[in-house]
Image 1 (cartoon, helix red, strand yellow):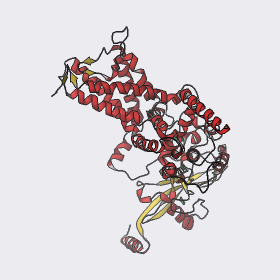
Image 2 (cartoon, chains in turn yellow, green):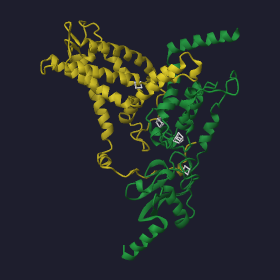
Image 3 (cartoon, helix red, strand yellow):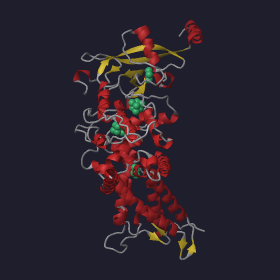
Image 4 (cartoon, chains in turn green, cyan):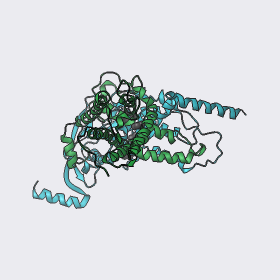
Length: 258
Length: 272
Ligand code: SF4
Ligand code: SF4
Ligand code: FES
Ligand code: FES
């Protein structure tokens, strides 16, 4: 039951709902497209950086550090750059992540650009019911792959404490560990993990280990509440780790260490 | 303002809580089929005034036939939903002194057919509600039921819904794309999630959620969550978990294999 034409009307322009703090005033004065533009810029920059690393970035390894873009080391001396074997998985994981979906539907597709404002689109809206967007439903498979990659990243980070059989602790080691922590918080705060751990259960008392699963679900829910934050932090930390190791490798900076 | 006027204001302030400030309201007036317009009213502000108070002041003193729906004035009945300054809110929960300086616009919810002024016809929602497979108690459960805290905790949140329909109003699938026949809307995924996760419920609504409910239309952009006056995490706790259940059945061959095996085993158990 849609509204009939005679009762259609345009709501008034949106103004504020709350009194403005200095921050709000600043935000309001900034043009409305600033936020979507920032999201578009940062995400595009990440994709461009990822592709550049994969195809032209060379191999980023300097003992004991291995860049996250090249881990696990598959076919290190093969005909194509080793990053190509790894990169698609995290990219797929992020592209189908519920949080990133929200971010790009709003920023790239403007569907909707903001809440309770008009939309420009003329084509009939299909949401995630049709190809290709319904493929997002495969997110949990991307998650399995991302967990495998994450295990390798932890192995690399732990291996970075060892240089030729001696204990080593450099700034790079710390960066790698922090990167792994951010990535773990992001990966395990995933809605699919939350579902598989306990969300899919209707009655915890009736399944094996039900109470444990409920506790697990509660823990994942805590991570999940900050999923957006972990999503951005881990995106930056991956790039930061790669850039840092690259700079050490090329000798532009020396790695401070114990 | 003259000195006398100021003095009067002060006296009133002590007498009936008036602050001395006059707030200008621009209120939508109209009925279907006729030219609609915004009418301006000046309302003397009272300490702690909410938008619904201002509407009542207008009804009492300035325009007796202004229509609005309300009941509790305590943010609990969900009747007074409207769009204040373009934001879907409960009028009784929106304080005038929280609003920025300047004219306050009040309009009815855009997504539902207009009845008159601020009143819209929300009956479509009740039809959707009636279409949902209702609570179906398990047959094998001895009565009286004993339910553990950890089995029911997730559901409290869903029970908080006051059916204000602000989430339905703001959802772009209904508001901008008019897909009322194809999409149940956020409020009804809250209800369905509450039923699906209920430990004593036996019905299976996964296919209904996908087909009649049209959950695939939701692109999880979270406007519904933003406006819910009961702070229900509609997207994170109701819609996404339901999407995951749909994925279990239709998008996860490995999981489907396991469930099938389990079902066959259960059927064999039952047959014995
Ligand atoms: S998250 Fe889904 S249901 Fe909620 S407003 Fe957005 S599209 Fe509508
Ligand atoms: S879910 Fe929230 S916004 Fe939607 S009808 Fe219920 S109380 Fe209102
Ligand atoms: S990684 Fe974001 S929801 Fe799965
Ligand atoms: S009057 Fe009951 S919610 Fe506002």
